Length: 341
Ligand SMILES: [Zn+2]
Ligand SMILES: [Zn+2]
Figure (spheres, protein in one colour):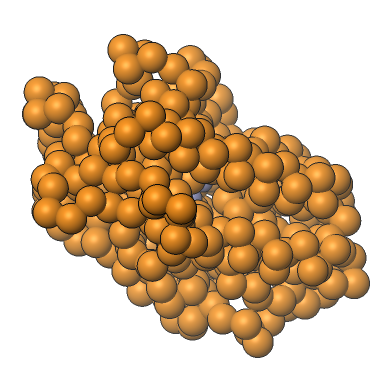
């Protein structure tokens, strides 16, 4: 989701909207993140119980909101037969441990969730690493100190780390009353990201890979080329020709191809902004942020810096792999330049 584009809203209550017989969208409020008011989980009927897709973020009252939403769908936590996480971000995985505890269900998730462990096992060390990446990317030292102070001891959004019972990989099928769902690896937004597809009904559970409104985020630093991986994952879901997409944020939508195209256009536009800015001369990743967001340096907020640096570094890495930009050797903070043709 995009940083800083919407003012924070008053807390909503968890609720369920029936998408079609057998599937409910559970709309779960988030208070911790400005600009991201809620996340969707999905309850799909399966025999005498439900399969739950994603969990919501762990924060005070969040489990109660999940129970409230499930109640609207006529279900309770104890009815969850299987918990599936589309990826290991806190808003999709944070409540996994208490859900498993309450229901005794299994958790299935893609094995590349090391990016989550890195943040959840030792939050202080993870903050230290983020600050170092920001320093090396040219963020001014006073801004770094303010960010570090503000974030120190802030909640991780994960109730407790819990390992999956089964690796969610292609070939694994999820049985529900609506039929079997197949697993497609879709890294880019996060290394652990998968989409689930129900071929007979043409439904895609897209997690954060495709969203109701285009909003790019890459988990940078865990894989070689997050932006390139994201573009390949768009090709993966395009081949499915799904007719209905149930996303991790926002309303369900049917114009799936238009959303895929809009994501490609957005990546290409935002990558061009980075290249155009580099055309004015060598820059640190931080120097490129105002161009990425089309704002002045003064208008950058901490969330834009934190998420925008990951996006900028992902584009620089991708453009470097394509031979179009290069990092200048031996500079700290790092600077990048266009590669001479
Ligand atoms: Zn996510
Ligand atoms: Zn999300």
